[in-house]
Image (cartoon, rainbow, N blue to C red; front, side, top):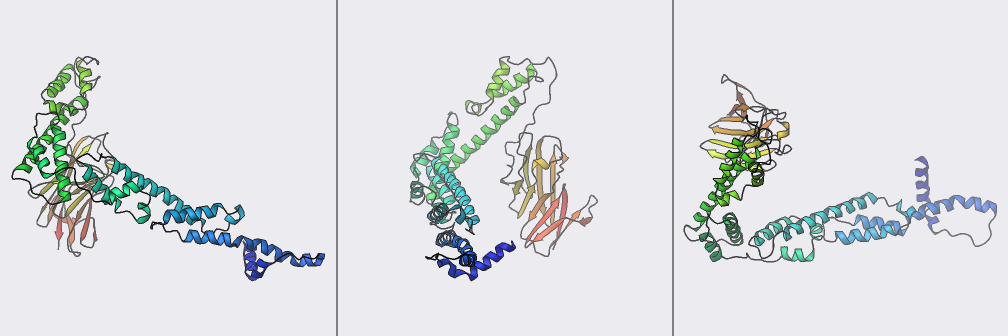
Length: 433
């Protein structure tokens, strides 16, 4: 390191050596010895020549947020590749160039994702307008450099004015023709809703009186169909070659046959039932084995925000607990009363049972009652559950009430007008302002 510093210092004081040329006449041994140090500095400082300086400048000029990002990076890459291996060692900002190369790879992947979404719906589909608008919203969050990686044709679509592939008259007619006995009923309802949403996003529209109620009623029927089919699906999934009896198989068969044709097509594991009915598996003579838990069809989705259901002052939500459920993401449950409940990932749940976890939170005046149970037993997590209360005074305090109704300290933090309560079990809290 000391030698390098000495060489660098010598280079600074020997700048004139950059233009040094070998003598044209023969030199004595003494002359050669006298110039040997200067000649060495010439070789060292040569590496700081115009080529190296140009590459350093080109790299410094790269901006990964502007539309010139690609061309600037290409120019810097080309100039760097043309350097000798020795010259490359003196490009002091090479790490910046390397980082920009990684950024380009990330931008390309992002552009590919946007183009895949844009191409996921045919231009003739009723959902095309909605898909383009959603993709456009995403595209508009990108900076100029990121946008430059999207193909010109996709950019043209995402920056052009488009209209929905439908009209009010078409939507009204589709809604009027909805028939719950048709095999295509669910798809018909989904298409009608998609077209209506597309029109509403395009412009504010008015439907004739009673038309939207027909669509809402149809959507309620779809929800009921899915719930009925889900029950049968769970019954079939609970069948086991080792433990299910002929009576169990018959019960599942009877439940499936009780469904309407529209509902039956929603049961994905019907062929498993067919195998049991056709005797593919030998059922035991007696006894019933432990069946898979019947889970909720309206449970909160891990990793996403779920609105809790309100009944008077109480908000409730359900969480499915089973081996098949996502165990890595937390649950975010919201209310319309400035409260949010955060449930840790199921992977941190200490209860060994399966089934449907019940979550409820009630706010009356300054009292908050929180409950979390699984099969009527209090849940236990390795991590705390969290209740977030908005719009409280920063000076407000929160206490916990014990089993005797007396206040005890609560575990909470304050950030502005938000209070974060941590709790490992069901509890009641009092807000003191």
